[in-house]
Amino acid sequence: MKIVLLHYSVPPVVGGVESVVGHHARLMAEAGHEVCIVAGRGDQTEERVGFVEIPLADSRHSVVASIKEELDQGKVPDEFAERVEELAEALWEVVSDADCLVAHNVCSLNKNLILTAALKKISERSEHLQLVLWHHDLAWTTPRYKDELHDGYPWDLLKTAWPGVEQVTISEFRRREVADLMNIPEEDIWVIPNGVDVTRFLKLEDLTSSLVHQLDLLNAYPLLLLPVRITPRKNIELALQVLAVLRETYPRAMLIVTGPLGPHNPANVDYFRNLQSLRDELSLNGSVSFLAELTPNFLADEVVSDFYNLADALILPSREEGFGIPVLEAGLAGIPAFCADIPPLRDLGSPYVKLFSLDDSPAAIASMILEELPSNPVFEFRVQVRSQYAWHEIYRKKIDVLLQKIERDSALIQ
Image 1 (cartoon, rainbow, N blue to C red):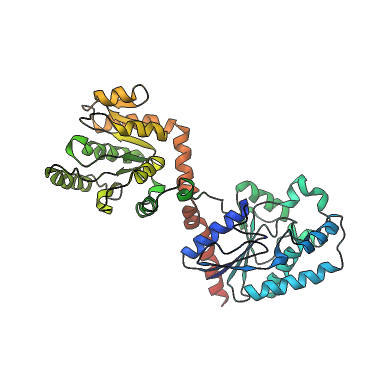
Image 2: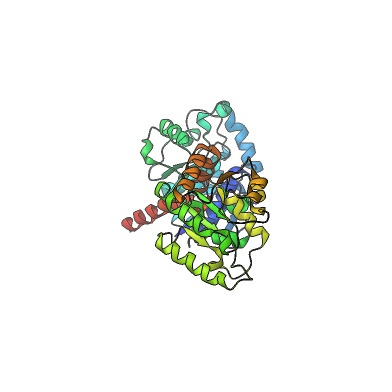
């Protein structure tokens, strides 16, 4: 599908809506759509996303600013209609062969009513172009713009339900506002929230980001980390057994073992095979990931650090340790640590870590984790943000659903 995104300005101009438009464009392009951004200011920042500059679309254009001064006083200058026609023609040259035009805030705010009115003409002119009005802010519902809004055209374009368009808001609160303002049913309005770019926010290494998406780690609930080499003294089989019990309560629980096979003992190969067999026996395929299976190279410290920032808890069931660096790393990363009660780990972490006896059953250890994590609001919120507000998840669960509907509706019309 050919999709055009429209706003007053776009990246590299810095702004909340500008950032959202940039993310949407990138995600749509990654999904295989032909994507172009149209704005009054900005530039091409993604190789796969085209950019067309139409200066009159800018909210800060001198002509737009001059006309807005009169509009704010309740006067529609003679020049307004002429500029609307000019901008509508410029827009039509870009969108005439598009399937979908997504306008962000253009029909919500009075920052550039020339652009709003031009877009209304586009919506009336085209029979095949699906218009999506994406509302971040609403001029008519905030006192901030009260003195700038007046009865009649063009101000009423911002509070009227245009026929044949898809209405999108960024929150349930905004949906209620739009429904009341435009007198339309709430169920006719999409809610698609803004998100966070996990990779950029956490500054994940390229390898980490690739593994996160390959293993679907953002949907883990919880994600346990075991950053050790694969060698018998690390007692990795206990972590697998604990995870099997945890998944009875948390079916999305996952475990990541970051280390390679221990390099000095040939028996580690047999130990690894036994762990893989145990994973099969416990039906943990897809839930336990040995990164040694996925990358032949030794993981850099930066990648291991990434997994601490992603994980919800550290589990360290070692039978013996000389020191226990992962305990310190968990403390630095600010995640709970569940560790075997052996002297080095007890000395390092007590009273801050949760200790379990090596004689405890997997069920008892899982119970300790189940008692600790759900009572931690930070854990619950992290999981919610990771699984519901990561941009890739928002695209998959929300934006793509909207685009598929548009494609189906278009096919019916044709």
